[in-house]
Image (cartoon, rainbow, N blue to C red; front, side):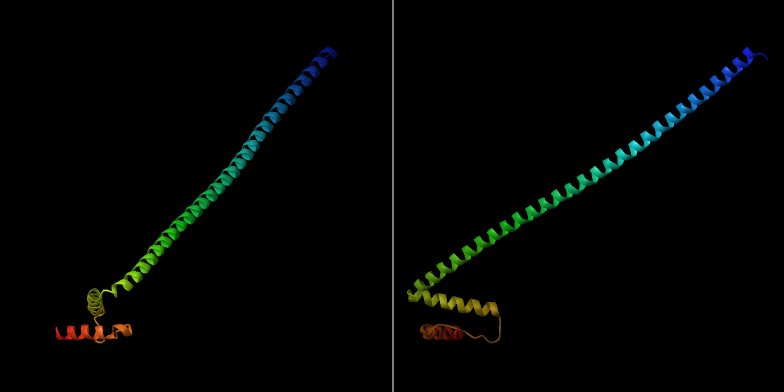
Length: 152
């Protein structure tokens, strides 16, 4: 072999080695690109998952706040209703007390009221013995009513 053939052969070997090196470099580059994309995708998915979890946590907090607020409003409404009922009951009690003072003035009406109250309470209690409490001023009236009921 002469020097030209040797140089040609060396040049061919150098081209072959360079081509192999380029292919290897391309392979490494493609592999690195794939690994980069996979890593990037994993990071993106991990961050998406964190964001979803944070969103769900905040959504639950909002739901809890809404439930607490609803419960507080409901309780406030119930308190208002109970207060209104109490006010009505108090006003009815006051009105009844005032009316009772007027009823005792009308002797005939008061006598009938005492009779009805005694009968109603005895029927309602259904007890073998009962203790009646009354005003001292009504003692004679109560005795007459009880004697009239026993006689009847």
